[in-house]
Length: 182
Image 1 (cartoon, helix red, strand yellow):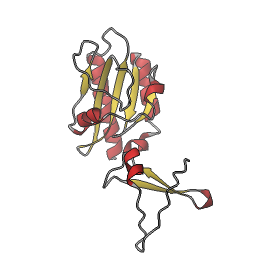
Image 2 (tube, rainbow, N blue to C red; image 1 turned 60 degrees about the vertical axis):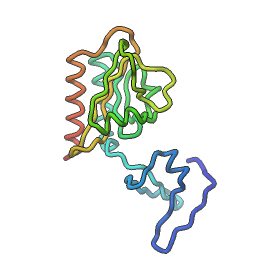
Image 3 (cartoon, rainbow, N blue to C red; image 1 turned 180 degrees about the vertical axis):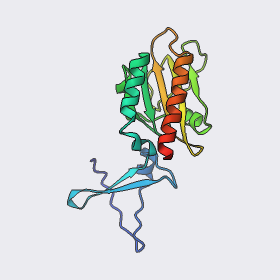
Image 4 (tube, helix red, strand yellow; image 1 turned 45 degrees about the vertical axis):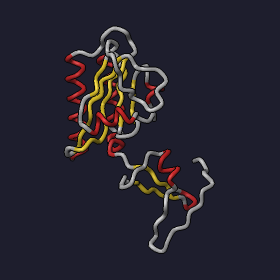
């Protein structure tokens, strides 16, 4: 845990205000759900709720299987960060914040696709240093609302994503969405 030096008092209704600077840095918006945990020594831990974290029993194996089957990096995100990844680009992805442009694709429930021949590329990550040569992201929807995405990435100059990869991506996104609905 990192100390912020900020102290707040609980009001007579039991409410606590999370400072704007912290909300902005953690990308917490009004009406976002927050999970509450208790720890030792009287700790109260607040965590932005992500439905995709419920898949922690399935998602790591799924990205490993996709990586093994197609030889490209696979990742699963919620609606703000990359939660699970497997492949050569794993270190660059895990925990990275998604770009606002990519999130716009998710909220429109559209697939993002570009390869090394694309004229314009939507950045996948907020602080992306270098462009990925090929990206394909498919939204995971739960009851019509975006909950996250399944992503394929490659930095190889030759085309990597064809009909089988795209069909697998759609299938994985549908599967994860169904798991979250149950």
